[in-house]
Image 1 (cartoon, rainbow, N blue to C red):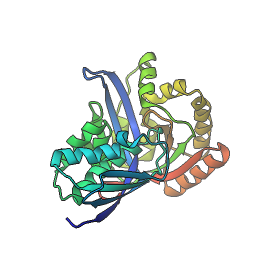
Image 2: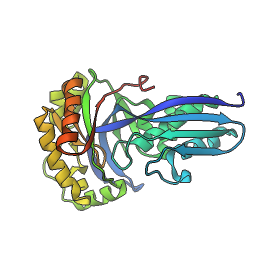
Image 3: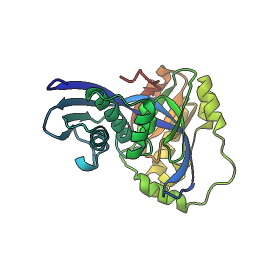
Length: 299
């Protein structure tokens, strides 16, 4: 290894097209069933490795945890421990994915760190080994090792990749409020479960066929009620967005993760761009048009 090498990489956001929360497991986590899809809203990371200096994280801002608790730093330290790496690394992080929005930015950054540093440090873990390391960092991190579309079970760490029929176009709306995932789970546990079974089949079918109409009608997230109970501001946000999404011809809309980001599915890129503009103007909420991405195309 030379004295210094650099690697730039992108960490994509994700959307939960389906998210069903079950009971609490023996390990304290909730059992979940979710279908996630990566989209082309990215955090940007630059890794520079050297022989000395420790692990340094430099960010352009954002509401990030202290360095010792940051998932990117923890990912670097985990690799150092498992592979006896003594080299130093400086990590530059440009945050474009909002925190506390349910878009998985922190988990995606951690997965990007595991992959990039494995390459820079000359390590050779397989995908399954990387997913195992990722699971030690957080429930969503294993999904981002491959990205694309996947069915995730357990506490989220059991990942089964799915084939998507074609690119899908979304609008993500990002109200200026954050949601604590821990608090959202607590609220969800206190709510009476809605009657009736919810099927994941419509989401899987629509995704596999690349059919936005089928997929849009099947979107589901157990956290939708909990987020609005936890932050009453989101009740009015949901009402505004439902109207705006309807006015722009969306095929369906839902909440990502535990919130607070909402998203809608559109039939084309042009429709999504127009939808994002309408939401910014009519609802006064930050919004952007995004496209689904597949493994290997995010960098």
